[in-house]
Image 1 (cartoon, rainbow, N blue to C red):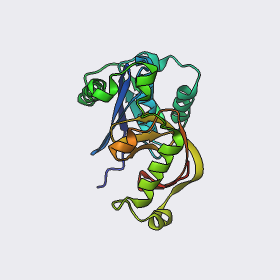
Image 2: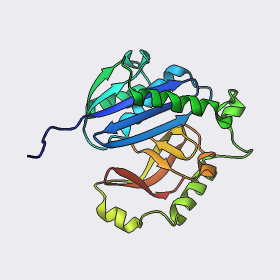
Image 3: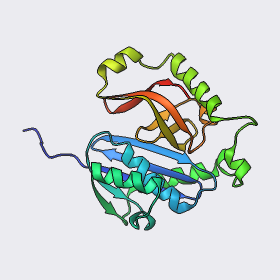
Image 4: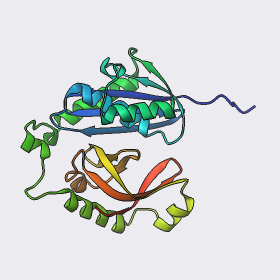
Length: 225
């Protein structure tokens, strides 16, 4: 007999000053996402981890969020809180603020690694930007667009459009987190990119892009700026 009991997803989220990480599990599936925002306080990073983890879920899901931070249960105003409220309207979310879960320990380990990385250490405004002189959103968008257009390992865009169950066409999406080789966009989640392109990205930039959602993953189709 086939087990018809719906699987439950779990988001294990952790954050500390300047870095966040989340480990998602769903049945036998597992995904890890992380990012850095030099100078950002621990509370913001803990909330970012929860939001980024929930935004990786591509359809309404029963999910338990496991965290150590009390801040995320307090509520508040601003972009991150709005995104959290949107996620809790989409998914059936329960919360667990204690428990010794290996995945939660893994999330904290990822945070620690991100904070100790050379490019995550600076804390001043200039260092947090971390960019070469003259770097700008337009230059980043151009570099990302060239990568998307010329990546030999990327699926065929025409096939992605044909198979897509959701599309984003020429819409702005904000960068919400940047990792060593990934960029997390609002409502899309993490997208893998070469490290040299990730190094140019900055949290808060809004990028005009098109993307296709296929079999649980978002794929960039075009980046205009």
